[in-house]
Length: 124
Length: 107
Image (cartoon, rainbow over all chains, first blue to last red; front, side, top):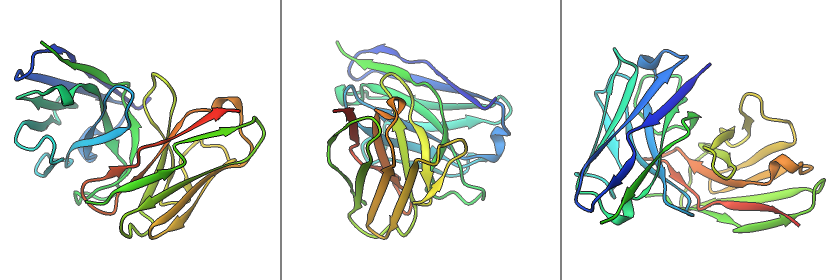
């Protein structure tokens, strides 16, 4: 079974840091680009960041550029999102999602597998 | 950045009726358009990609159409499990942008 399981969410103060993790199983993780998408309470989906299959290319939404860092460890089948300088507007459920592209060129694509999400709360 | 606009925000439909959801892109995205379904407390689920191709396991009552800037998701006969929020997403350009969603509710 293809599975993505996020962890690492929690309560953090404004200006603080948090690292999210996503454990992948059931597929060849090293072949697929991966993404983080978030959803603020009662709001829609917002793209956050993506990383190529080998980790050599990344993309960040303007809203998180310079504050968040996406990375992966293909030896451990793990995806990460290091979040810093957190703001109230970063409060959301964060989903990791698998890129469905059949090619290795890092380009925007749709996402065919999603984790259940981990909740980040930013509050003093 | 491409902006995706969905309409209506809420659609009230009776079970068994047809639902038609619209998605408009601020510039052409060719056929690089996906649709997702999200139920409360759950992750999004891929329904349609390439504007009109159903994802694995998606029932035939779901269909997608359109290209360029105008897209439609049609649910031919709504079942109880179809009441949810639906999002479109373009993947023609960075960043892959989502619409704000259409909530399909029971009339």
